[in-house]
Length: 476
Ligand SMILES: Cc1cc2nc3c(=O)[nH]c(=O)nc-3n(C[C@H](O)[C@H](O)[C@H](O)COP(=O)(O)OP(=O)(O)OC[C@H]3O[C@@H](n4cnc5c(N)ncnc54)[C@H](O)[C@@H]3O)c2cc1C
Image (cartoon, rainbow, N blue to C red):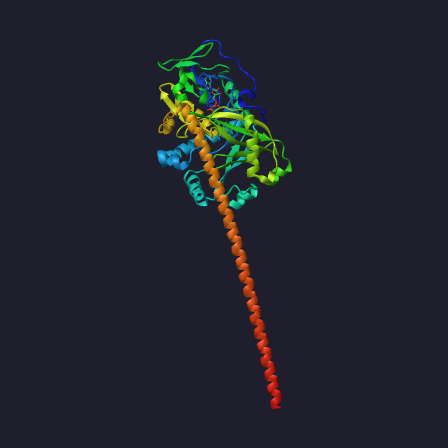
Protein backbone atom coordinates (compact mmCIF):
# COMPACT_ATOMS: atom_id res chain seq x y z
CA UNK A 1 0.00 0.00 0.00
CA UNK A 2 1.43 3.36 -0.96
CA UNK A 3 1.15 5.79 1.93
CA UNK A 4 0.45 9.30 0.78
CA UNK A 5 1.37 12.12 3.06
CA UNK A 6 -0.72 14.96 1.73
CA UNK A 7 -3.78 15.77 -0.34
CA UNK A 8 -4.57 14.44 -3.78
CA UNK A 9 -3.81 17.60 -5.70
CA UNK A 10 -0.14 17.57 -4.85
CA UNK A 11 0.63 14.03 -3.77
CA UNK A 12 0.52 12.34 -7.18
CA UNK A 13 3.88 11.84 -8.82
CA UNK A 14 5.00 14.80 -10.88
CA UNK A 15 3.97 14.77 -14.49
CA UNK A 16 5.47 11.81 -16.31
CA UNK A 17 4.16 12.67 -19.72
CA UNK A 18 4.45 15.49 -22.21
CA UNK A 19 1.72 18.04 -22.81
CA UNK A 20 0.16 18.17 -26.27
CA UNK A 21 1.89 20.89 -28.28
CA UNK A 22 1.02 19.93 -31.87
CA UNK A 23 -2.24 19.55 -33.79
CA UNK A 24 -3.32 15.97 -34.38
CA UNK A 25 -6.07 13.67 -35.64
CA UNK A 26 -7.41 10.57 -33.95
CA UNK A 27 -10.37 8.19 -34.01
CA UNK A 28 -11.26 8.75 -30.36
CA UNK A 29 -10.36 11.62 -28.07
CA UNK A 30 -10.90 10.85 -24.39
CA UNK A 31 -11.09 13.84 -22.06
CA UNK A 32 -9.90 12.74 -18.60
CA UNK A 33 -7.12 10.43 -17.48
CA UNK A 34 -8.86 8.78 -14.51
CA UNK A 35 -10.09 5.21 -14.25
CA UNK A 36 -13.04 5.74 -16.58
CA UNK A 37 -11.07 7.48 -19.34
CA UNK A 38 -8.09 5.16 -19.20
CA UNK A 39 -10.21 1.99 -19.26
CA UNK A 40 -12.10 3.36 -22.23
CA UNK A 41 -8.85 4.30 -23.99
CA UNK A 42 -7.14 0.96 -23.34
CA UNK A 43 -10.09 -1.11 -24.53
CA UNK A 44 -10.54 1.00 -27.67
CA UNK A 45 -6.86 0.79 -28.62
CA UNK A 46 -6.99 -2.97 -28.14
CA UNK A 47 -9.87 -3.06 -30.63
CA UNK A 48 -7.71 -1.23 -33.19
CA UNK A 49 -8.79 2.42 -32.79
CA UNK A 50 -6.32 5.30 -32.56
CA UNK A 51 -6.87 7.00 -29.20
CA UNK A 52 -5.67 10.19 -27.52
CA UNK A 53 -6.23 10.88 -23.82
CA UNK A 54 -6.14 14.51 -22.70
CA UNK A 55 -5.45 14.84 -19.00
CA UNK A 56 -5.70 18.34 -17.54
CA UNK A 57 -3.26 17.58 -14.73
CA UNK A 58 -1.68 14.19 -14.09
CA UNK A 59 -2.99 10.68 -14.50
CA UNK A 60 -4.79 9.57 -11.33
CA UNK A 61 -4.23 12.80 -9.38
CA UNK A 62 -7.87 12.86 -8.23
CA UNK A 63 -10.22 10.12 -6.92
CA UNK A 64 -8.87 7.46 -9.28
CA UNK A 65 -5.50 7.52 -7.53
CA UNK A 66 -6.81 8.44 -4.06
CA UNK A 67 -9.51 6.02 -3.03
CA UNK A 68 -9.97 3.13 -0.60
CA UNK A 69 -9.49 0.56 -3.33
CA UNK A 70 -12.57 -1.59 -2.52
CA UNK A 71 -14.06 -3.25 -5.55
CA UNK A 72 -17.64 -4.14 -4.68
CA UNK A 73 -20.56 -5.58 -6.64
CA UNK A 74 -23.40 -3.34 -7.83
CA UNK A 75 -23.79 0.41 -7.57
CA UNK A 76 -23.83 3.03 -4.84
CA UNK A 77 -27.65 2.98 -4.97
CA UNK A 78 -29.84 0.57 -2.99
CA UNK A 79 -30.96 -2.21 -5.30
CA UNK A 80 -34.62 -1.73 -4.31
CA UNK A 81 -34.44 1.86 -5.58
CA UNK A 82 -33.15 0.60 -8.91
CA UNK A 83 -35.93 -1.95 -9.22
CA UNK A 84 -38.48 0.72 -8.42
CA UNK A 85 -37.06 2.95 -11.13
CA UNK A 86 -36.33 0.58 -14.01
CA UNK A 87 -38.00 -2.69 -13.08
CA UNK A 88 -36.64 -6.06 -12.05
CA UNK A 89 -35.26 -7.31 -15.38
CA UNK A 90 -33.32 -4.16 -16.27
CA UNK A 91 -31.97 -3.96 -12.74
CA UNK A 92 -30.70 -7.49 -13.11
CA UNK A 93 -28.95 -6.55 -16.36
CA UNK A 94 -27.47 -3.44 -14.78
CA UNK A 95 -26.27 -5.54 -11.87
CA UNK A 96 -24.62 -8.02 -14.24
CA UNK A 97 -22.84 -5.12 -15.97
CA UNK A 98 -21.51 -3.87 -12.63
CA UNK A 99 -20.19 -7.37 -11.96
CA UNK A 100 -18.46 -7.33 -15.35
CA UNK A 101 -16.70 -4.15 -14.15
CA UNK A 102 -15.46 -5.89 -11.00
CA UNK A 103 -14.31 -8.94 -13.00
CA UNK A 104 -12.56 -6.63 -15.45
CA UNK A 105 -10.63 -4.97 -12.63
CA UNK A 106 -9.54 -8.31 -11.21
CA UNK A 107 -8.20 -9.36 -14.61
CA UNK A 108 -6.39 -6.07 -15.17
CA UNK A 109 -4.98 -6.17 -11.63
CA UNK A 110 -3.48 -9.55 -12.58
CA UNK A 111 -1.93 -8.06 -15.73
CA UNK A 112 -0.57 -5.02 -13.92
CA UNK A 113 0.70 -7.06 -10.97
CA UNK A 114 1.86 -5.88 -7.55
CA UNK A 115 -1.32 -3.96 -6.66
CA UNK A 116 -1.64 -5.44 -3.13
CA UNK A 117 -4.86 -7.32 -3.85
CA UNK A 118 -6.74 -8.76 -0.87
CA UNK A 119 -10.08 -10.57 -0.90
CA UNK A 120 -13.41 -10.13 0.84
CA UNK A 121 -15.55 -7.23 1.95
CA UNK A 122 -18.04 -6.88 4.76
CA UNK A 123 -21.00 -4.52 4.77
CA UNK A 124 -22.21 -4.04 8.32
CA UNK A 125 -25.45 -2.73 9.65
CA UNK A 126 -25.47 -0.07 12.38
CA UNK A 127 -28.99 -1.11 13.39
CA UNK A 128 -30.46 -4.43 14.39
CA UNK A 129 -32.28 -5.10 11.12
CA UNK A 130 -32.06 -8.82 10.46
CA UNK A 131 -35.32 -8.90 8.47
CA UNK A 132 -34.00 -6.37 5.94
CA UNK A 133 -30.84 -8.40 5.67
CA UNK A 134 -32.77 -11.54 4.76
CA UNK A 135 -34.60 -9.62 2.03
CA UNK A 136 -31.31 -8.37 0.54
CA UNK A 137 -29.67 -11.77 0.78
CA UNK A 138 -32.55 -13.29 -1.12
CA UNK A 139 -32.57 -10.57 -3.77
CA UNK A 140 -28.83 -10.24 -4.38
CA UNK A 141 -27.93 -13.86 -3.81
CA UNK A 142 -30.74 -15.86 -5.38
CA UNK A 143 -32.18 -13.39 -7.88
CA UNK A 144 -29.02 -11.51 -8.97
CA UNK A 145 -26.43 -14.27 -8.56
CA UNK A 146 -24.10 -12.27 -6.29
CA UNK A 147 -21.74 -14.29 -4.11
CA UNK A 148 -22.56 -13.33 -0.55
CA UNK A 149 -23.41 -14.67 2.86
CA UNK A 150 -25.36 -13.23 5.76
CA UNK A 151 -23.52 -12.90 9.05
CA UNK A 152 -25.36 -12.88 12.35
CA UNK A 153 -24.46 -10.28 14.97
CA UNK A 154 -22.27 -12.73 16.89
CA UNK A 155 -20.21 -13.56 13.81
CA UNK A 156 -19.71 -9.89 12.94
CA UNK A 157 -18.64 -9.16 16.51
CA UNK A 158 -16.23 -12.08 16.52
CA UNK A 159 -14.15 -10.31 13.87
CA UNK A 160 -14.96 -6.69 14.76
CA UNK A 161 -14.83 -5.99 18.47
CA UNK A 162 -17.43 -3.28 18.65
CA UNK A 163 -21.02 -2.95 19.82
CA UNK A 164 -21.69 -0.50 16.99
CA UNK A 165 -22.24 -3.17 14.35
CA UNK A 166 -25.02 -5.73 14.16
CA UNK A 167 -25.61 -7.99 11.16
CA UNK A 168 -23.39 -8.08 8.11
CA UNK A 169 -23.25 -9.15 4.49
CA UNK A 170 -20.00 -10.79 3.54
CA UNK A 171 -18.95 -10.58 -0.12
CA UNK A 172 -16.18 -13.17 -0.45
CA UNK A 173 -15.48 -12.25 -4.09
CA UNK A 174 -15.20 -8.51 -3.52
CA UNK A 175 -11.60 -7.36 -3.24
CA UNK A 176 -9.38 -4.39 -2.63
CA UNK A 177 -6.26 -3.09 -4.20
CA UNK A 178 -3.95 -0.12 -4.12
CA UNK A 179 -5.86 2.42 -6.23
CA UNK A 180 -2.79 4.50 -7.12
CA UNK A 181 -0.81 1.49 -8.33
CA UNK A 182 -3.80 0.30 -10.32
CA UNK A 183 -4.49 3.56 -12.18
CA UNK A 184 -0.83 4.12 -13.06
CA UNK A 185 -0.57 0.48 -14.18
CA UNK A 186 -3.67 0.97 -16.33
CA UNK A 187 -2.09 4.01 -17.99
CA UNK A 188 1.02 1.97 -18.79
CA UNK A 189 -1.11 -0.83 -20.29
CA UNK A 190 -2.96 1.74 -22.38
CA UNK A 191 0.28 3.21 -23.70
CA UNK A 192 1.59 -0.24 -24.47
CA UNK A 193 -1.60 -0.79 -26.53
CA UNK A 194 -0.87 2.41 -28.50
CA UNK A 195 -2.84 5.09 -26.61
CA UNK A 196 -1.23 8.55 -26.62
CA UNK A 197 -1.67 10.19 -23.20
CA UNK A 198 -0.94 13.89 -22.79
CA UNK A 199 -0.73 15.34 -19.28
CA UNK A 200 -1.09 18.99 -18.27
CA UNK A 201 -3.35 19.25 -21.28
CA UNK A 202 -6.86 20.43 -20.38
CA UNK A 203 -9.49 20.38 -23.10
CA UNK A 204 -10.69 23.99 -22.97
CA UNK A 205 -13.43 23.82 -25.57
CA UNK A 206 -14.93 21.50 -28.14
CA UNK A 207 -17.19 21.51 -31.13
CA UNK A 208 -19.01 18.16 -31.22
CA UNK A 209 -20.96 18.99 -34.41
CA UNK A 210 -20.15 17.34 -37.70
CA UNK A 211 -18.52 14.04 -38.52
CA UNK A 212 -15.08 15.18 -37.41
CA UNK A 213 -15.31 16.86 -34.02
CA UNK A 214 -12.88 19.50 -32.79
CA UNK A 215 -11.22 19.80 -29.42
CA UNK A 216 -9.12 22.76 -28.35
CA UNK A 217 -6.31 22.59 -25.76
CA UNK A 218 -4.06 25.51 -24.67
CA UNK A 219 -1.38 24.69 -27.24
CA UNK A 220 -3.00 22.50 -29.87
CA UNK A 221 -6.15 21.38 -31.66
CA UNK A 222 -7.43 17.87 -32.26
CA UNK A 223 -9.90 16.34 -34.65
CA UNK A 224 -11.66 13.13 -33.73
CA UNK A 225 -14.58 10.99 -34.87
CA UNK A 226 -15.64 10.43 -31.26
CA UNK A 227 -15.20 12.45 -28.09
CA UNK A 228 -15.56 10.72 -24.73
CA UNK A 229 -16.20 12.95 -21.73
CA UNK A 230 -14.55 11.21 -18.76
CA UNK A 231 -13.61 14.27 -16.73
CA UNK A 232 -15.73 13.73 -13.62
CA UNK A 233 -16.38 17.01 -11.74
CA UNK A 234 -13.44 18.84 -13.32
CA UNK A 235 -14.71 18.66 -16.90
CA UNK A 236 -15.30 22.45 -16.86
CA UNK A 237 -15.66 24.61 -19.95
CA UNK A 238 -15.96 21.94 -22.68
CA UNK A 239 -19.16 20.60 -21.10
CA UNK A 240 -20.51 23.13 -18.62
CA UNK A 241 -24.03 21.72 -18.69
CA UNK A 242 -22.73 18.25 -17.97
CA UNK A 243 -20.62 19.62 -15.10
CA UNK A 244 -23.81 21.13 -13.67
CA UNK A 245 -25.36 17.67 -13.34
CA UNK A 246 -22.79 16.56 -10.76
CA UNK A 247 -22.70 17.47 -7.10
CA UNK A 248 -18.99 17.53 -6.23
CA UNK A 249 -18.15 15.71 -3.00
CA UNK A 250 -14.71 15.61 -1.39
CA UNK A 251 -14.07 12.57 0.74
CA UNK A 252 -11.18 12.38 3.19
CA UNK A 253 -9.20 9.36 4.29
CA UNK A 254 -6.24 8.64 6.49
CA UNK A 255 -3.81 5.93 7.53
CA UNK A 256 -2.86 5.40 11.15
CA UNK A 257 0.54 4.84 12.65
CA UNK A 258 1.48 1.12 13.03
CA UNK A 259 -0.83 -0.26 15.73
CA UNK A 260 0.99 -3.49 16.52
CA UNK A 261 -0.80 -6.50 17.94
CA UNK A 262 -3.69 -4.55 19.46
CA UNK A 263 -5.13 -4.10 15.95
CA UNK A 264 -5.47 -7.85 15.37
CA UNK A 265 -7.16 -8.22 18.76
CA UNK A 266 -9.88 -5.76 17.76
CA UNK A 267 -10.17 -6.30 13.99
CA UNK A 268 -9.75 -9.83 12.73
CA UNK A 269 -11.17 -9.23 9.24
CA UNK A 270 -8.63 -8.72 6.46
CA UNK A 271 -10.95 -7.33 3.78
CA UNK A 272 -12.64 -3.96 3.75
CA UNK A 273 -15.50 -3.01 6.03
CA UNK A 274 -18.13 -0.41 5.25
CA UNK A 275 -21.30 0.39 7.12
CA UNK A 276 -24.55 0.22 5.22
CA UNK A 277 -25.09 3.98 5.73
CA UNK A 278 -21.93 4.81 3.75
CA UNK A 279 -20.41 6.66 6.68
CA UNK A 280 -17.34 4.69 7.73
CA UNK A 281 -15.16 2.62 5.44
CA UNK A 282 -11.94 1.02 6.66
CA UNK A 283 -9.49 -1.82 6.22
CA UNK A 284 -6.16 -3.03 7.50
CA UNK A 285 -3.16 -2.10 5.35
CA UNK A 286 0.53 -2.89 5.67
CA UNK A 287 -0.15 -5.52 8.33
CA UNK A 288 -0.94 -3.33 11.32
CA UNK A 289 -2.18 0.05 10.10
CA UNK A 290 -5.76 1.09 9.69
CA UNK A 291 -6.89 2.95 6.57
CA UNK A 292 -10.09 4.83 7.35
CA UNK A 293 -12.33 7.16 5.41
CA UNK A 294 -15.29 9.03 6.74
CA UNK A 295 -15.63 12.82 6.42
CA UNK A 296 -17.19 14.36 3.33
CA UNK A 297 -17.68 17.97 2.27
CA UNK A 298 -19.10 19.65 -0.79
CA UNK A 299 -16.12 22.01 -0.90
CA UNK A 300 -12.41 21.32 -1.14
CA UNK A 301 -10.78 21.45 2.30
CA UNK A 302 -7.29 20.54 3.49
CA UNK A 303 -7.31 16.81 4.34
CA UNK A 304 -5.09 17.32 7.40
CA UNK A 305 -7.98 19.24 8.97
CA UNK A 306 -9.86 15.93 9.35
CA UNK A 307 -7.13 13.82 10.97
CA UNK A 308 -8.49 14.40 14.50
CA UNK A 309 -12.04 13.64 13.35
CA UNK A 310 -10.90 10.26 11.98
CA UNK A 311 -8.97 9.49 15.19
CA UNK A 312 -12.10 10.27 17.22
CA UNK A 313 -14.21 8.13 14.91
CA UNK A 314 -11.86 5.15 15.28
CA UNK A 315 -11.97 5.56 19.08
CA UNK A 316 -15.76 5.69 19.03
CA UNK A 317 -16.16 2.55 16.93
CA UNK A 318 -13.29 0.59 18.46
CA UNK A 319 -12.72 1.83 22.02
CA UNK A 320 -10.62 -1.29 22.59
CA UNK A 321 -7.90 0.16 20.35
CA UNK A 322 -7.23 2.98 22.79
CA UNK A 323 -5.62 6.13 21.42
CA UNK A 324 -4.74 5.97 17.75
CA UNK A 325 -2.79 8.56 15.75
CA UNK A 326 -3.46 9.18 12.08
CA UNK A 327 -0.15 9.55 10.30
CA UNK A 328 -1.17 10.65 6.82
CA UNK A 329 -4.29 12.03 5.18
CA UNK A 330 -5.53 12.51 1.66
CA UNK A 331 -8.68 13.44 -0.22
CA UNK A 332 -10.29 13.01 -3.59
CA UNK A 333 -13.40 14.38 -5.23
CA UNK A 334 -16.15 12.44 -6.89
CA UNK A 335 -19.29 13.55 -8.66
CA UNK A 336 -22.65 12.51 -7.30
CA UNK A 337 -25.62 12.53 -9.65
CA UNK A 338 -29.09 13.40 -8.42
CA UNK A 339 -30.30 9.79 -8.91
CA UNK A 340 -27.03 8.28 -7.66
CA UNK A 341 -26.36 6.28 -10.84
CA UNK A 342 -23.41 6.94 -13.17
CA UNK A 343 -23.72 8.83 -16.44
CA UNK A 344 -22.95 6.33 -19.18
CA UNK A 345 -24.07 6.71 -22.77
CA UNK A 346 -24.29 8.72 -25.95
CA UNK A 347 -25.21 12.40 -25.76
CA UNK A 348 -25.36 12.82 -29.54
CA UNK A 349 -23.75 10.95 -32.44
CA UNK A 350 -20.02 10.75 -31.69
CA UNK A 351 -20.24 12.40 -28.25
CA UNK A 352 -20.15 10.05 -25.27
CA UNK A 353 -20.13 10.42 -21.52
CA UNK A 354 -18.71 8.13 -18.87
CA UNK A 355 -18.78 9.96 -15.58
CA UNK A 356 -20.58 10.58 -12.26
CA UNK A 357 -19.43 7.41 -10.52
CA UNK A 358 -19.84 8.71 -7.01
CA UNK A 359 -18.49 6.90 -4.01
CA UNK A 360 -18.62 3.49 -5.69
CA UNK A 361 -16.58 4.24 -8.78
CA UNK A 362 -14.10 1.42 -9.18
CA UNK A 363 -16.14 -1.45 -10.62
CA UNK A 364 -18.56 1.01 -12.22
CA UNK A 365 -15.96 3.20 -13.99
CA UNK A 366 -14.24 0.05 -15.31
CA UNK A 367 -17.58 -1.19 -16.58
CA UNK A 368 -18.49 2.24 -18.03
CA UNK A 369 -15.16 2.64 -19.85
CA UNK A 370 -15.31 -0.87 -21.28
CA UNK A 371 -18.95 -0.53 -22.27
CA UNK A 372 -18.50 2.77 -24.12
CA UNK A 373 -15.55 1.31 -25.99
CA UNK A 374 -17.72 -1.65 -27.04
CA UNK A 375 -20.53 0.72 -27.99
CA UNK A 376 -18.35 2.86 -30.27
CA UNK A 377 -16.43 0.05 -31.89
CA UNK A 378 -18.73 -2.93 -31.76
CA UNK A 379 -22.18 -1.34 -31.58
CA UNK A 380 -22.97 -2.76 -28.12
CA UNK A 381 -26.12 -0.86 -27.14
CA UNK A 382 -26.37 -1.88 -23.49
CA UNK A 383 -25.52 1.73 -22.59
CA UNK A 384 -29.24 2.31 -23.23
CA UNK A 385 -29.90 0.60 -19.89
CA UNK A 386 -28.62 3.82 -18.32
CA UNK A 387 -30.98 6.01 -20.36
CA UNK A 388 -33.61 6.24 -17.57
CA UNK A 389 -30.96 7.93 -15.43
CA UNK A 390 -31.00 11.21 -17.25
CA UNK A 391 -28.71 14.18 -16.87
CA UNK A 392 -30.39 16.14 -14.10
CA UNK A 393 -29.07 19.50 -12.95
CA UNK A 394 -27.53 19.07 -9.49
CA UNK A 395 -28.43 22.58 -8.34
CA UNK A 396 -25.16 24.52 -8.71
CA UNK A 397 -23.80 26.28 -5.62
CA UNK A 398 -27.17 26.07 -3.88
CA UNK A 399 -27.15 22.35 -4.60
CA UNK A 400 -23.80 22.04 -2.85
CA UNK A 401 -25.12 23.74 0.28
CA UNK A 402 -28.21 21.54 0.24
CA UNK A 403 -26.01 18.50 -0.45
CA UNK A 404 -23.81 19.28 2.56
CA UNK A 405 -26.82 19.85 4.84
CA UNK A 406 -28.56 16.69 3.61
CA UNK A 407 -25.35 14.70 4.01
CA UNK A 408 -24.88 15.97 7.56
CA UNK A 409 -28.53 15.31 8.39
CA UNK A 410 -28.57 11.79 6.98
CA UNK A 411 -25.29 10.98 8.73
CA UNK A 412 -26.83 12.41 11.92
CA UNK A 413 -29.98 10.37 11.35
CA UNK A 414 -27.96 7.20 10.80
CA UNK A 415 -25.92 7.91 13.92
CA UNK A 416 -29.13 8.50 15.89
CA UNK A 417 -30.68 5.29 14.57
CA UNK A 418 -27.49 3.46 15.47
CA UNK A 419 -27.56 4.90 19.00
CA UNK A 420 -31.19 3.87 19.30
CA UNK A 421 -30.41 0.36 18.09
CA UNK A 422 -27.55 0.01 20.60
CA UNK A 423 -29.75 1.44 23.36
CA UNK A 424 -32.48 -1.06 22.46
CA UNK A 425 -29.92 -3.82 22.48
CA UNK A 426 -28.71 -2.65 25.91
CA UNK A 427 -32.28 -2.59 27.23
CA UNK A 428 -32.90 -6.01 25.76
CA UNK A 429 -29.75 -7.34 27.41
CA UNK A 430 -30.70 -5.78 30.76
CA UNK A 431 -34.19 -7.25 30.45
CA UNK A 432 -32.69 -10.64 29.60
CA UNK A 433 -30.37 -10.40 32.62
CA UNK A 434 -33.31 -9.43 34.85
CA UNK A 435 -35.34 -12.32 33.45
CA UNK A 436 -32.46 -14.69 34.12
CA UNK A 437 -32.09 -13.55 37.73
CA UNK A 438 -35.90 -13.77 38.17
CA UNK A 439 -35.74 -17.33 36.86
CA UNK A 440 -32.77 -18.12 39.12
CA UNK A 441 -34.62 -16.71 42.15
CA UNK A 442 -37.74 -18.68 41.26
CA UNK A 443 -35.69 -21.84 40.77
CA UNK A 444 -33.92 -21.49 44.11
CA UNK A 445 -37.25 -20.68 45.86
CA UNK A 446 -38.71 -23.77 44.24
CA UNK A 447 -35.69 -25.82 45.33
CA UNK A 448 -36.03 -24.45 48.88
CA UNK A 449 -39.74 -25.30 49.02
CA UNK A 450 -39.06 -28.81 47.65
CA UNK A 451 -36.38 -29.24 50.32
CA UNK A 452 -38.79 -27.93 52.99
CA UNK A 453 -41.50 -30.31 51.77
CA UNK A 454 -39.08 -33.21 51.78
CA UNK A 455 -37.88 -32.27 55.28
CA UNK A 456 -41.50 -32.01 56.51
CA UNK A 457 -42.29 -35.33 54.89
CA UNK A 458 -39.26 -36.89 56.60
CA UNK A 459 -40.23 -35.37 59.95
CA UNK A 460 -43.77 -36.64 59.53
CA UNK A 461 -42.48 -40.13 58.70
CA UNK A 462 -40.22 -40.07 61.77
CA UNK A 463 -43.06 -39.00 64.07
CA UNK A 464 -45.33 -41.67 62.64
CA UNK A 465 -42.60 -44.26 63.07
CA UNK A 466 -42.04 -43.15 66.65
CA UNK A 467 -45.80 -43.31 67.34
CA UNK A 468 -45.98 -46.74 65.78
CA UNK A 469 -43.04 -47.91 67.94
CA UNK A 470 -44.60 -46.40 71.04
CA UNK A 471 -48.00 -48.01 70.23
CA UNK A 472 -46.28 -51.42 69.72
CA UNK A 473 -44.54 -51.08 73.17
CA UNK A 474 -47.85 -50.27 74.91
CA UNK A 475 -49.42 -53.33 73.34
CA UNK A 476 -46.54 -55.43 74.65
C1 LIG B 1 -11.49 9.04 -0.55
C2 LIG B 1 -12.19 8.25 -1.62
C3 LIG B 1 -12.35 6.89 -1.45
C4 LIG B 1 -13.01 6.14 -2.43
N1 LIG B 1 -13.06 4.80 -2.25
C5 LIG B 1 -13.67 4.03 -3.19
C6 LIG B 1 -13.72 2.63 -3.04
O1 LIG B 1 -13.16 2.06 -2.10
N2 LIG B 1 -14.39 1.91 -3.97
C7 LIG B 1 -15.00 2.49 -5.04
O2 LIG B 1 -15.63 1.78 -5.83
N3 LIG B 1 -14.92 3.84 -5.25
C8 LIG B 1 -14.25 4.61 -4.35
N4 LIG B 1 -14.17 5.97 -4.55
C9 LIG B 1 -14.76 6.58 -5.76
C10 LIG B 1 -13.86 6.41 -7.00
O3 LIG B 1 -12.52 6.65 -6.65
C11 LIG B 1 -14.28 7.39 -8.10
O4 LIG B 1 -15.66 7.28 -8.35
C12 LIG B 1 -13.56 7.10 -9.43
O5 LIG B 1 -12.18 7.09 -9.24
C13 LIG B 1 -13.93 8.16 -10.46
O6 LIG B 1 -13.11 7.98 -11.59
P1 LIG B 1 -13.19 9.01 -12.81
O7 LIG B 1 -12.25 8.53 -13.84
O8 LIG B 1 -14.60 9.20 -13.19
O9 LIG B 1 -12.75 10.42 -12.18
P2 LIG B 1 -11.35 11.10 -11.81
O10 LIG B 1 -10.50 10.21 -11.00
O11 LIG B 1 -11.70 12.42 -11.21
O12 LIG B 1 -10.65 11.34 -13.20
C14 LIG B 1 -11.09 12.33 -14.09
C15 LIG B 1 -9.88 12.99 -14.72
O13 LIG B 1 -10.33 13.86 -15.76
C16 LIG B 1 -9.48 14.98 -15.81
N5 LIG B 1 -10.20 16.08 -16.46
C17 LIG B 1 -11.34 16.64 -16.06
N6 LIG B 1 -11.71 17.61 -16.91
C18 LIG B 1 -10.77 17.66 -17.87
C19 LIG B 1 -10.58 18.48 -19.02
N7 LIG B 1 -11.46 19.45 -19.36
N8 LIG B 1 -9.48 18.26 -19.78
C20 LIG B 1 -8.60 17.28 -19.46
N9 LIG B 1 -8.72 16.50 -18.38
C21 LIG B 1 -9.80 16.69 -17.59
C22 LIG B 1 -9.19 15.26 -14.34
O14 LIG B 1 -8.00 16.03 -14.20
C23 LIG B 1 -9.09 13.85 -13.76
O15 LIG B 1 -7.76 13.39 -13.70
C24 LIG B 1 -13.52 6.76 -3.59
C25 LIG B 1 -13.35 8.13 -3.77
C26 LIG B 1 -12.69 8.87 -2.80
C27 LIG B 1 -12.49 10.33 -3.03
